[in-house]
Structures are given as structure tokens and as C-alpha cells.
Length: 347
Ligand code: CP
Image (cartoon, rainbow, N blue to C red; front, top):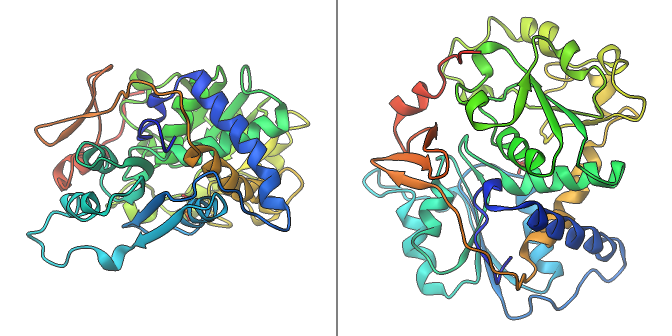
């Protein structure tokens, strides 16, 4: 991928791209498990990790993957964000990174579309490690790697995604990637936490309850309730959310016998997941963390198969998907648009 295109959205990847990344990642798992965890694949390359939002798993995964592949890594962080309100937080990374002769930039930012914005302005490859409420493709790839390890393939898999879908870039990337790979995705969430564009933009079925969504599922992916992104009025109370939408051992009883429980982390124990199942036999949450390093290995290794890049278009401050002409993510820096994207959906 370092020698190939940006990775901004799972829509950039066809099924054979995803398969190629997952196969590469699977191979790299062995490297992470041996005493000398280093190969020369990226010797002489420079990767900048630029995280303007908090991250533990993703940042560590990318940095470990880059180091194990012998790349030189540098990082900027929230503290390096511009201090003047007149200075655009998105344009700063472009000005900073262009003269540094970087090979790749791994970027997390609170604005939807920010990775695309930067990718259009610098020569280095941009790997989106989470942009606002838009996408988190590296998380979706490691999630798909985890599912593939357990079930051998993704095609035909029944996946239930439960919880705060509205604010979840993880859900968006997974819904796109899983549909590309032929998995069947159902979702369950309070109406206030379902995005308006869900039916039009994603191949998913919407269930009326968590019980209905998990019944017969092979994968139950529970999302973190992102209270920090909620401007108020989304839920009557955490207690009520937990009663109606919290996943419990009893609910997991109606899944298939070999079903797995996933969560991108960090988990709000006792809110979206009952504490006993977080570490229970169906949980693969720690596998997801381990696969984070392997999955990002799969992303940063050279890929000679160059493909035309399909990206979002930013027009009049709104982020558009050119193939769907959707205004499905909030505007850069516009609080008004962010709250518009938060309105309850029509089912
Ligand atoms: N899943 C995930 O993105 O974790 P971090 O926020 O810790 O990177």
C-alpha cells in the first residue's frame, strides 16, 4: 500500500484488494510472534503518524507494524495541533508534511473527510486511521481479518452490528467492507443512533431489536456508545440504553454455537456489553487488538498493484461520495452540518 494508493475509505477497495491485504496480514502474524520481530520490507522509508484525536490501539498498531517492517517512524500528536484558531487544523498537516519527503502518513482526525483533504494535497500516501464519523478502514480490515481467521471466509457470513452506528466510523467501514466481501449485515440501534443515510448508502438490514439482530448471527459486533460525540438528547439514560441495547450472555445464546463477540474498544463495561461476556469464551476482543498490528502490516507493505483511486469529493464544505452523490458525512468544521447529520433517521 505504501507504493500504491491512499486508503481513505473502504469504498477504495475491491474484494480482491481486501483479500490481498488480509492474506498479507495473516502472513505477518508469524513475524509478530517470533523472538526477532523485524523484516527489512520498508527499510529506508519514512512514515509519519499524525493523531489529532486520542488513540491507543490504532496508533500502537501502526507504529509497531512500521517498526517491524524497518521503516523510520515519526509522530505528531494532539499537542502539535495549531494553537491559533485562525490556522486550519487540516491545512497544517499538509504544510508540515510536504517538505519532509515522507512515504506515508497515518492520520486520525476529528473531522469527517480530513484524510481525503490531506491526501489531495501531499505527495505521501495517506492511510486513514479514523476521520470523524466518516470511516476507520484499518479497524474494519483488522475486524475482517479476525472474522476470516475464525470462519475461513467472509462471504455469506451473518454479522450483527449493535449500538451507536450514527457516530461510528468503525461501523461505516465495516458495513462497506463486509458488503464488498459478500457478508450479510444486520444492524440494531435506537432510532436516534441510526444514520439517516443508512438504507440508501449501505447494504444492511435494520432490525427492530437486538434480539432479532443477534438471532442466528455468526458475528456480533458491539459498538462503543460515543457519548463524547453526542450533543444531547440521543438517549433517555444510560440505564435505559443498557436495558434495551446492552448485549448480554442471554442474548448471545440465540446466536450460532460458534458465534464470536467483537468490539473495537474501548469497551464501556456494563453499558453496551455486560461485563461477564467481555472476557467470556465468545469474546475475540483481544484477537482484534493483536490483529491490529498484523492488519496494519498488511496495509503498509509495498503493493505493486496500483489502482485508480476513488475518493470523496469535497464541495462547498460538504463531503460527497462521487459514486453515490451522498452528503453522508458532516461538513468540515461546521457544527451546523454535524448536528444535521445527527438527526433521527427515517426507517
Ligand atoms: N479501535 C480504535 O480505533 O481504538 P483506538 O481509538 O484506541 O485507536
